[in-house]
Image (tube, rainbow, N blue to C red; front, side, top):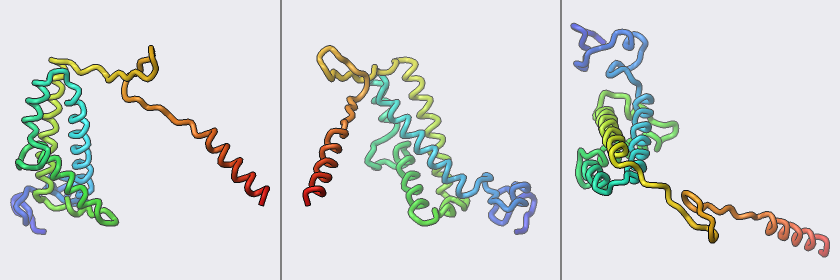
Length: 179
């Protein structure tokens, strides 16, 4: 590749250190690093979506949800659309064995979509934090499992399978002895 006045053949400014090390020079990240950034952004978005649902003010939740856009991918360039598009691109990478990180290698719109989502996640985080600080969060759900006993969070009763397993093992053992 011939570099003239710091510009490579693609017209993007080259980072000579990264170029010498043989890594892609656009923004200094490899396809695998872009893939990791994409996964991180989608995971943060999803975690913020959960936090959004816990904001005590329905009005504040509705305002942020309006900003996010519809969840049905109807409106392009909304944060929700960006999240869904990047999540789809992640499935494209993971759809091949080994993962095709080359999908994010080039200085393409795939990388710009990740950057746009990261920017939206930053804005989303600041909106959620401001609403949490202003309105607080809803108390955890309380579930009454027995009269007089209240637990916090979802009811998670563990079933004890010890007795049924002993009975089945005993039945099998008895059947083997009798046959």
